[in-house]
Length: 228
Image (cartoon, rainbow, N blue to C red; front, side, top):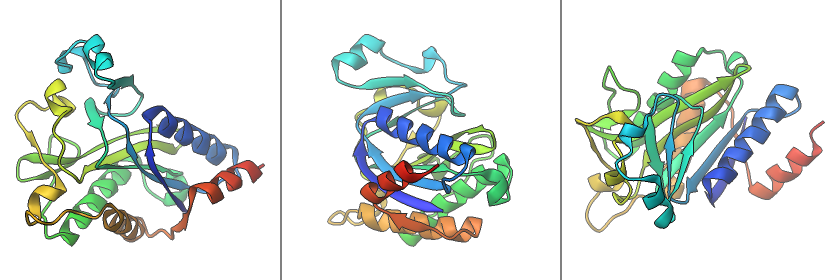
């Protein structure tokens, strides 16, 4: 399994890279891949999302330079922005040895273990997907599976930025708040994104009994070019 840190990329580029990796996986010759990245400001609406969860006109989003994308992942409406870690595992569930339910539970477990590294107790709430601290959501989970290979994944709110959240009903959950990893650290401290990424990959290996090889963007691009 390969992990690639893409840095900050537009949402459309992240989606394209997932689709390329998915094609490489299902056609053979490409290993499972985990993309770690941050996105430019964007609001995304999953398969169960509805326009009623968007609290402003699409034209108003465009005027602010905020993209809106309707995608085929599970879940409703969420957002991405600088300071939020997004993780896209493009993995073969058969090779991983788990079904969809086990996989999503595993992603939530990875987030909770990563939060615990910072002394934060994350939890599940039975009727919702994702991870919460008390009653506030800190991580969203939504995947798509095609030909038993996954797309999309989860996002973890690391640095506090509430600017996009007033524009929509997050995940369609009106009675819960939003929180951030940094909110639980001392006032003069901030979570190092690199440290968070290291924790995510370590716990991914633990939860799914996987072995992960980290590869930079350039090396991964060459590997994509060489695949049959």
